[in-house]
Length: 385
Image 1 (cartoon, rainbow, N blue to C red):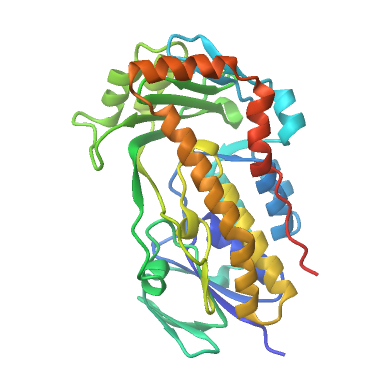
Image 2 (cartoon, rainbow, N blue to C red):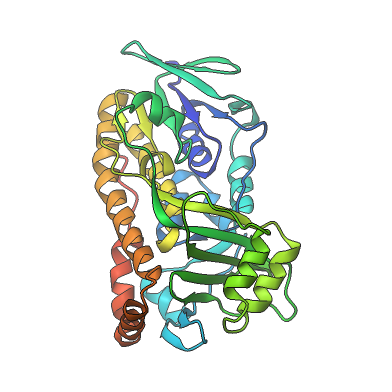
């Protein structure tokens, strides 16, 4: 019997993970990437225990290779901008309660996934221009030609072309009200500290150690949509964070010799459903979320693992995608909501609200905060039998 065929649109983390999951189960897969090459633009990424379980389900040996890329994130908690701790988590206790957390560079993760996909499956420079259906297959038209498959996977990000073509009734991404800067420092003398977040009024600063004594840094600020730093992003970071507690001023200065990425933060209104016929959405194309829980990539990996499992269990693609939607939509949209709420609280700017927030954070036991994260990271891959 001929292998079933899948066209995956998007060559990022979710698209490549899906290609691995499907090809390992006998599918003939093609991955279409709009960019001229398969490469990740980004900085650091956190992989919680649910993402590591997803990687184990996606393909043999993938999780072990990823574990070799980064060490456990030593999450320090949340500080006031003067350095006072508002809440603090012990890394050992965090791991005991919620499992390991890996912090690594996005490019390293993408490279690991890319190495697990057959080169002949990768098609770069292919921008999708149309999608057609005939009941038994899906036809994808792109700038490099045309592809036909039993399944079309839209893993092409928050501005998904697949979603726009097949879900034309969906609302566009929604601006969360704040922008974010991201960068990775060069190796720091003596190595980075344990990391954590600092919350101000309408601003936040985060740091997390990477391998080789580098530090992944990120910062947020309430700004109008589409604004950029008039004299450069590093200058704006200095203006906002130079007087915050150590080591933040030094980390801002370290940004001067690196590529600083600035992106406004968006999320998707509820997409319903995640599957239509033989077309399915994964990752940011389905449930783009704010980064406040560190779950964007984790949920994309869960999507890929779940899709592989349901297609292995159900011989017919359409019922399998209905089951995928049932397994993924409620969970991911709940996490979108949780992340939005966390970000909104972190971005409060009223002095009274900030003072109340900081006091409440100091009063909430860490174990209660961990308990709220437990449903997010306790996910298990579905049974594919």
